[in-house]
Length: 472
Image 1 (cartoon, one colour):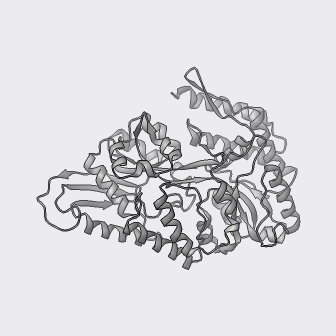
Image 2 (tube, rainbow, N blue to C red; image 1 turned 30 degrees about the horizontal axis):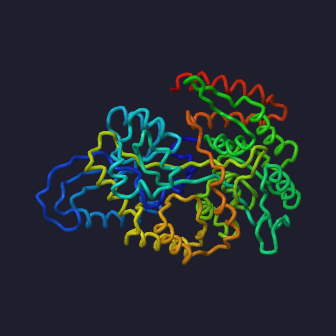
């Protein structure tokens, strides 16, 4: 899957908070003689461009425009031009190499080391501390964009993969408790058993994962790690592909068994991520591995009832439970001035991405959660925590509780345990690794007699020569 679409698969910004702009283009800075109104009236003039701006047809366009009007009144010295450009590997590299990166832009957790190695992100340590971000964001996320004590970005969204379930099919198969809550499988073996019962009782597919656009490899990590697969290791300063192992072979054999032994995956098992989400939302699929930020996209797309979706933690394999943790960073161009970085941070604060419980942030919560509830979207699950400062967490949870509209038992297990055993994405060429495993999984799902060991050996050899031999 293309990098900029991986989390969104047809509708991103699920991972990106709707209120957060993903980029601000480098602009000019001049001294102001004063005048105007608002906090920035007598400060220097700063011009920035906010990229990642939603299209007029996007649901969050009006909200962003409202934030922009508020910002103009509060900071008349800061000029913002909006731009729809968002990060992707193809357009990013030319911009970076030519010094044309936006002042503020976003990238994924998988790209942090590349960005820091190439000096494409500015050291924002002082301002991150000044505005309270350094101590308020989940340390596990902040660590990923910190090197030698210096901070090179702000994590602005995160997820851990869980098992997304269609409650309707669990009910039809008699796999719910007295309160209508699914009897969630806790191991991959139990997933196979549960999927068989659902297929027998309903005729619908019990389990599926996507196999296209890098999503197959991305989701397969959660299974392979739990079988003990080690994908990459560094020995004597050199990276080595190590996934052609008995552990990875066993994980792929599990997928093969789901199709050929248990017959619980869709007849056409080669699926886009959008396909699996649509199947969940139309009662055609009972379970899939998925990020915790996609359920409202499913409701918007398929109109399934909010009460028909549930999520639990990723099942455990022979070596335990290892959900993948991912997300996105807001970064600043290396040639941005301190004044531009500070202007970008002020924009993020007005757009509700703030560690402080400000009036703008409280109003954003009210607008967002009330609006979601009125639209029949899910309000209540806490998911993977970005913020850790207690005042902010408690304040947002209080607003969320006010508009909660689902049975939290459908989400409780995930909410309480989604951070246990989390593992960050592979450090070297993760996207290319996902693409390689898309092909491997497709082979497994289309050839009952495929030689899995040979396929893994060939893939490891190619991945080594194509990427790891040149990695530092």
